[in-house]
Length: 413
Ligand SMILES: NC(=O)c1ccc[n+]([C@@H]2O[C@H](COP(=O)([O-])OP(=O)(O)OC[C@H]3O[C@@H](n4cnc5c(N)ncnc54)[C@H](O)[C@@H]3O)[C@@H](O)[C@H]2O)c1
Image (cartoon, rainbow, N blue to C red; front, side, top):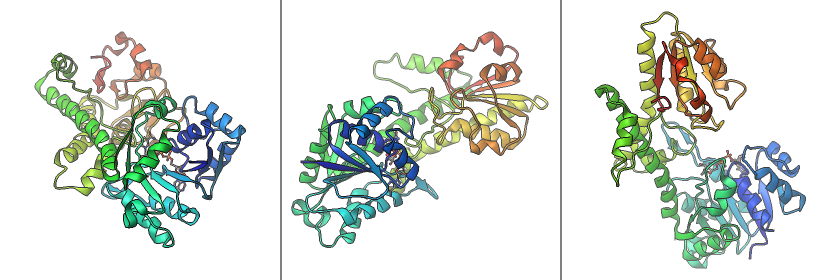
């Protein structure tokens, strides 16, 4: 049914998906506008960090099932996993999706299936069908002809965890929404080639909203914990003990607070709901503001402590957006360090065991230095714990004596 599948966008989502299909002996044509990515994959290597992926890509390329190119070619199905960031005042930017759709339009033929995987605002899949229809008036599309259309169009969001993508791609349930029932059924047939978990059918708009809902749920719940941490500071209560106690209730499960929310999903996707329904999405919007406000709150605490010292040394432990990874995208820890550096109140010792050089966003500041955890703790007057990397748990508490500690993650609670 699907001899050849084309994956458009070969990043963190597209490359593992392409490789997984190829490992099931489907001929996969990977398409990416990034020549370096294409060349690397064609050598059987990978340009992203993801455990176990290198072996699968290497085998798929050497056996001839996976090939990458910069220009779309005919295939029986097209999966699109290109970036969907936000722009301006948190408005979704679907221009990559539009460009990808327009790039495959010339090679579409009757009977093809097009699936959007990128996290997208509700309505984007229908919009994609319209873009395809405008580019190919000789073919019919489901937004025009329903079940009788020449081309099937569906949406299937991705919910894998970076670092566990190879396992989760196969074992996570997937929500699959076609513009018509036939579109859904064909998309499910495609995913069943490599997915061992459930493929659950819905429509395109619900599937789009489902992905946004999952990440908004996380965001709102983290905002609750972050707000509690600020309330507890005010009331002189240990928030970590409080949450532990409250979670003894059989139906309460409060998440842990932190310095904010980062990454390219949870801190981004709720805005796709807010921008579509600003009047209705009040809680989701507020949660975004609470979480985006947390780095500023942490900075205020540091400034207050620093105001009692002369030219203090401030150790900031962790720069990644979550523990035990090297991903710095949208990291609240980076924001804290940037804001502190901008205040010019002292020397900042940044610690991030998973990177070797300061990220560009921090190199402009003369008062930030990347050092080891040991050196930072030894020389600091103020210690700000920002990311609960496993290695930080090894820091001996006796080393903290006499220092002002701001622990945003409860590592030393
Ligand atoms: N990474 C994750 O953990 C994750 C999880 C769930 C959902 N998502 C969503 O999946 C989508 C892709 O994310 P990602 O992390 O793989 O992004 P990424 O930046 O790693 O990869 C996207 C790739 O698309 C390529 N590209 C851009 N425009 C193109 C075009 N017109 N034609 C062909 N290639 C093009 C880029 O060069 C890049 O290699 C996003 O919508 C993201 O929100 C990501």
